[in-house]
Image (spheres, rainbow, N blue to C red):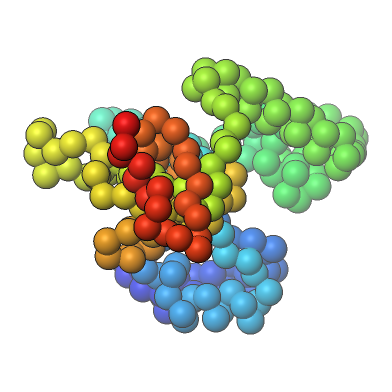
Length: 240
């Protein structure tokens, strides 16, 4: 797209939806075109739930990020070999859609169109491929659960016990120079917790932020709940 305004984005989505129907949900980043009232009203009229990813946490939309990496690699190969990149992208999509996925054990085209995807690899035309949706979903859930267990073990992930009202400091995502501290010393109050999706409020400016839990650090090495009736007591608890 040469223009990524909310209006142009809606036009492209309308063309896609005219062929495939309305999706149940849309996962997108926090670009202005996706957070605008125009886009949200369009999705509301179509009965679509919009899930915006956590800022500075691309893993939340990992499927798209992984696909972008493959496309970029294909473009680099095309550039190095002085080929038509548009034709190479079509060849890549043909290959991707007809190759069984390691998680589902089935090619994306079979899951989408419920039929075998005919490519250059010959197969018996009288062999009918009958997809059993429940079996595919069970395999998909099993493989994703294994991947989650591996990722949690590699990152040494633990369950979060963060609660509303606790005090945290935020990690500096962008740094002015090498001497910029890793964390902003200004305290923030947790206002909402949904698993790793944390909403916090700056205690000085009152500005709201949305971060993943890995971007937060507890104050004085221990989470402390703030008494809503007496916010002045126990705010930072620096007596130690």
